[in-house]
Length: 261
Image (tube, rainbow, N blue to C red):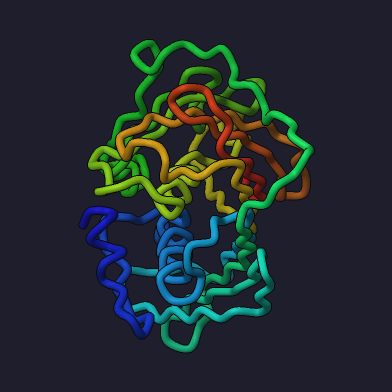
């Protein structure tokens, strides 16, 4: 199933289907889960206010099959709406997202976002191949290219990396939900330091929007750079910045992740 087809499975009551072929270990790819949650929230309660930030908790592994989504508005003011959307499979909550949406307002304070790094171009970057049984299934749907740093399990002396990300089959239009899916395609920032495969997963994920992704083409190759803040006791924290194809900052991302190695 394509990204658009997956979102279209969710009906007006929030009942949908999570697909096969988008797995990540024993769970469904977290970026797709986040995209499905946000897309339902936008269509059911959010209206046209742009996303300012979300916080997503992966409560339990999501699996292919039926999913029930429930969105609710926690508070709505003149400019800002606070809302929540939850995904349930059976009797188990698998993920929940707290969302802040806010209409633009006039302000005299303008501070530019982070400047894009000087990376080798996409054509000079290392494209991550999809290898059945070795790379996660969801990689088959994305174009991931490493421009700096090393891929997972390469035994690097240092963490962190930068590169480009896009859809192999772009959605019909670029949306915030599509960007949510793209940003989570990258693995936890410390995995390049491991010498062999080991389980790892996101525990919580926060993303803040600096600009509207919908103003960019659906086939954009977005730039991504991640830095590790620390990692110990099997838990780590990282921060990433996302730029569009022209180097304009669009989003900031933070994750707490677990590593079982």
